Image (cartoon, rainbow, N blue to C red; front, side):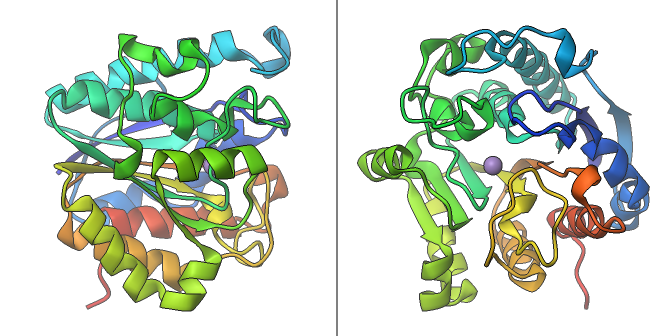
Length: 299
Ligand SMILES: [Mn+2]
């Protein structure tokens, strides 16, 4: 496979600065070798956006902080993913905070027009708020709902079409922190949520089986991995850490199983905050996860 690494050093969607350094830390943790060791060719490796420090941009509406610049950077990412797919390459997007998922999901939906895209969203949070339900106004908590066509029309309208995915084709795994409004929206719109409680009840193996069943209806799957899904013990270097998360084996097993049996069209890894990391622990976990997505198997 030919891989294009698209770096999105963006931290506008979160209130805590530092996710902009994520791509650099993931590079240092050995991303190049991990991609090449799976037999892939790195066709291109760059950042499609030219970005000034967050302080340089206006916050704008407090309910949709940094909306204008997030939209413009995500539109650039969307177009770049279309180019990547047109060239027959695999888009690997490295964040940045989770707001970049707006551009990623819009990108794969544009690039594969007419195909049914499923989204595997591995995250401690639902990211299913709208400007009305969000307690913070941070767009990284609205990117999944917006991709499903909910919320502010400027967010949902990225790329000129909406929704990018149907909420019934969305599976969220590892959730343990939901705001009341997004909980309601998730239920009303029929997205599948496997919270940590469900994982405890069913076991990760059964969660994987059920996820595969849901994705049977889809042609292609986009993987969106928020590193905060891991327990902070293993992944301290994330924007908003939530206790009692998944252990690395559960996530790596999930990625191995899903990529073995489903057609993956793209993947992104987000929310690494190197400032809060301990000796690149979280960055190395990110690289291990990417290895699994790209085909690493022990035996
Ligand atoms: Mn997230």
